[in-house]
Length: 116
Image 1: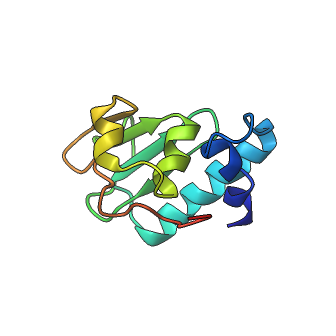
Image 2 (image 1 turned 90 degrees about the vertical axis):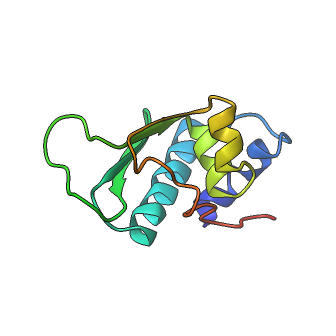
C-alpha cells in the first residue's frame, strides 16, 4: 500500500510524475495484488515496461501470446487499481487494450482504496 500511496499526488494531479523506481514499485506491487486476488493463468495483464502478471481462473495458457490480454500504461493501471478511473471509462476512452472473452477486470477493480 505504501508504494501506491507514494504516487497518489501524481494520480490526483497535484505533483509531477514520480521517479521511475517509485512508479515501478507501485505498478509491480499492485499487479501482484491483482494476481493474489484473482489467482489463475487465463488472463495476462501488461503494464509495460514495468510488469505483467497472469491472473483469473480458467484455461491455463502456456505458450505464445495468451488469448486474453489486457495492456495499458502505468497511470491508467494505477488509476484503475485505486478507483480513480472505472473500467468502463478506461475502455471507452481507449486507455486500455483488451482482447479475448475474459479480458475484463471490471469485477476485480478497484484493488485499493488508497487516499480516498
